[in-house]
Length: 483
Image (cartoon, rainbow, N blue to C red; front, side, top):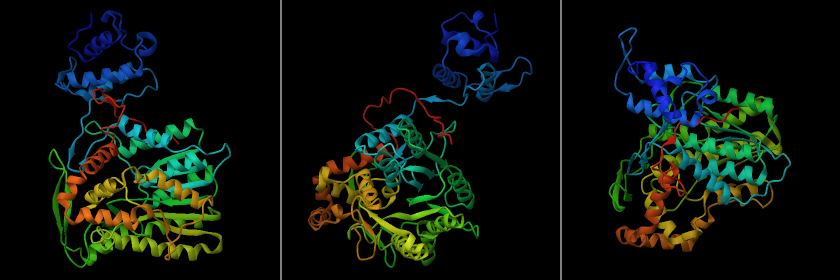
């Protein structure tokens, strides 16, 4: 019998246990599924079990050197049938959260949020090919909603671009990675021709790669949707790295904010000093229109703009209550630059094309949760509106209907598409303002709104999603959709 103290011996003993067979019957180089009856899921569970049980040092009988779990994986790979993935990792995961910050995600929960959004979108797409769309920032927030409504209702084709982190031995993949995999599965099942690229959209390399893919597979682009949110951007011409900041301009910001550091939400205070001219300029470089224009220029330079080409960048205005930290702050300066860029692009495209910014309403997103006071404001808004709080998918549906001509464009005096009338309704804002006047008393009335907000935050990362058994281990190494 094989010595169970050696690496191969330990593996064969574990395989025997998984297969329910005597260890003597386990071949050292057999085909696991054919000879042992162990499928890939059982194998993945076995690898995790080995990692947990063999995290201690294992002696190697030939060399006497000390071996680690990485070597166990290498030996296991020699026993695997050709082509089977050895990187699958089944793990028990618990949320790692501090306030609004959650640093890990649950693959099944994140996927379920995508399926739930998909199911809530009325299906109206026909079998004919829809427009070709290049969607920059497809994996979260309004970008994800625009992707799913476009697929579900307009049969869009094309390419989505996002920059997401894959799983490692120490951490899960980002929630956007898991959402992308789920969206790709839904698109494939519904026979939609849509591809996904994981790359830094700000880079010239990304533009070259994505446009080559578009040219080869689809030809010209009908719509470019720009929905990127990032903390930094490297200028492709100078190589300078710009970092965005969330700060007021002109004067410090002191306001109530939702504090979720304890068991129950409470009202705290946030104080921020005014941003500098350099911080304002850097934020504009990251979140303004510079990169949007580069993408349109790149498409035009390769003759990839279809007749009637339309491009839209998502933006936000919000309430006067949050204006000092948002619209009048460094982010607002970037949004104003985005809107100026729309007019520049409109002139560049001429009569044959269109460029807009689309002003969406409030939403719970990974980006918005980082903005001070937005959480408290959104909790109050949800309390006032209840089910009248429009989802990102509902707003994205409105956007697509306007872009495709199914509904007339709802433009304001600045030429922006407005999707936020439900939020900025005078009666709604008066009621939110009343809660804001005395935030502690307001939070007592808006306790369910605060709980809803925190539940939405956790849902973004795949936590607290109905129908998910969090006591069961999950496969964290979900592959990125193939091209």
